Image 1 (tube, one colour):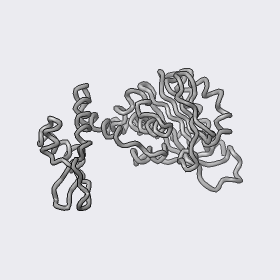
Image 2 (spheres, rainbow, N blue to C red; image 1 turned 135 degrees about the vertical axis):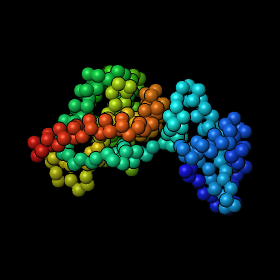
Image 3 (cartoon, helix red, strand yellow; image 1 turned 60 degrees about the vertical axis):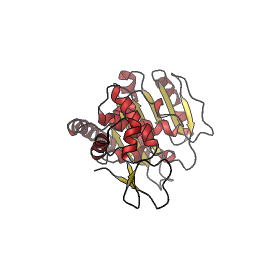
Image 4 (cartoon, helix red, strand yellow; image 1 turned 45 degrees about the horizontal axis):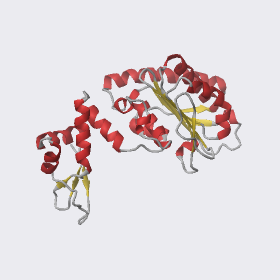
Amino acid sequence: MAHDRSTDAGSTSVGDLAIGELAEATGVSVPTLRMWEQRHGFPVARRLPSGHRRYEAADIELVRQVLAHRRAGLRLDQSISRVQLAASPPTASVFAELRGVNVGLPVHRLSKGTLIAVSWAIEDEFMARAQRPHLYGAFQRVAFYERAEARWTDLARRAATTIVFADFDESDPPAQAGTVRRVGLPEDSPLRSEWAVVCDSDDLCIALSAWEIPGQTDVPDDRREFEAVWSLRPADVATAALVCATAAGESATVASEGALLRAVRPGPRVDAEWAAAEALFARMVAYVDRRQR
């Protein structure tokens, strides 16, 4: 069932549209718009105190965008998801967004040493397989990035986009392909407490994100503990890439051309296949982590 947006009395505007007016403006019939609402929750109506349902004037353009994606060959669910993702910027936290879009994603408590090993494995696989991916890394502090700077300079030579985040004093201008763009994070940014490696491409998708558990000021650096999640699902990885692009102050289109399309959740059978691969990956990481302690 479609969800209504409630509104207070007197808050309606000249742009409020009845469903018939939306249909007339977009060329989509009233029965079709109602079917979209019931099956896909789009477009979203606002319910007035009188009980009538109204749409925003902006919904006209959103419906037209769905029609454009349909003409380009996308399925209806893909078209709607792509429009909704583009219209609703993600949060500033890769960790929170991954858990939000995939509530069943397991959380693993790992040492920093293990996270470094996992990150290197992801980066090496990217070098071996990915074709011009969009690569993002969150390092918390400048000193941590400087230890990995030479490695990430090499990675950038194979990437279409390479953006790194830390507490840099200032951000670089938009980078050219093959170079690293450094983005300084404000003090209140959730990414200042997060570790992330995101590789988004058509042939290799993986996202690793972790947040540092508070209260470890006296813990040796390589023994600091994080809660980590990772995903191989293209939909999850595309979402993580959009978080990073937004945090960098860039349009979502900085992500690869297929990112928004991949962010459409696949069917349960495909999801189960990715879950099995992630479970095996988790088991291997657990063994590595135990040996490091």
